[in-house]
Length: 423
Image (cartoon, rainbow, N blue to C red; front, side, top):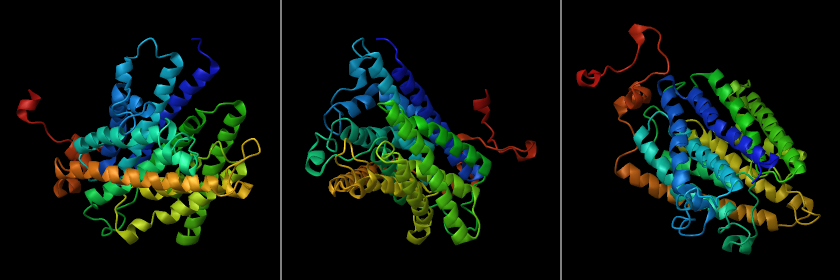
């Protein structure tokens, strides 16, 4: 098969999306405490390694073939054996899909910063991407329950999710909330002044910039025409720009001054919200979605103090809330296709709105139940949390025997190796 410009664009987009996971690592690493920065970065990086292997062995097959929980007993890529009948275009699409799975599970890690065992997290990544992400991706994009031919899609209408409002962001955000309740809060949650302050704001800004850059591939990789690609590009610029300004406005009114962290978080909230809608709304609609996401997420991040869940880096407030906003907003703002359908505000009636709400509710229930089962199984067997002593001295040391920062021999924080280990 001849390599076309379309193939090249998907390959470039896949590389952009893969770059988002290191960007997320920097974003989360900068927001974490100094004594947990490397652990936070490693939780994202190990997701690349684990999901990259899982995707080749069985993950992709689960997202593309019917069976129990998607294609669990269906048609894994290992059965295809990367044989000659798997064409160039198929393999390019397989690689592109892998990058979505990688960043989805990595997003969850920010909620459980400072207190999670690295081995337990690695096991969770393996099981969760298999039993939650892959089945849901099949249901939405592979012809399963929520697609046009699926039972739910036929009954309530097919929901629009171009790049992952349900599959990626609501999925990850709700999983983060469930894990937080299973693992519990950090020992000083709500007690120590400034405990939640990011330790390296420039690193956060660099991570946010990498995420925004990669998001053009995240949203635009599946564009079918030049016109659609142009719309996606503009919307991926407009929504996060509006969300950033909206978040800063909330901070200015509520706290008296805007912050760099607010700007970075607003950008991410806008990117999350426009993800499912990027090919379905006008640029003006993208601005509306951005404003709603910026305001909604800026207000939602404070709910953890009211309800007592220690979402360390605001995964729930940003990804779950903005994901729901963006997914449901399609029901109001979707443009008509060939003069028909569209959202409620375009005269399309309630049909699309109902489809969006049903898909959102289904995702919340499916993800919540499955994540609870997986999380509790790990929690009750090998355990998720480090000891209080290890949490106090930092998970960088306890889990990796490393430190993100060293300022001379007297303050070096590497643990000495045992005599037999040196030998």
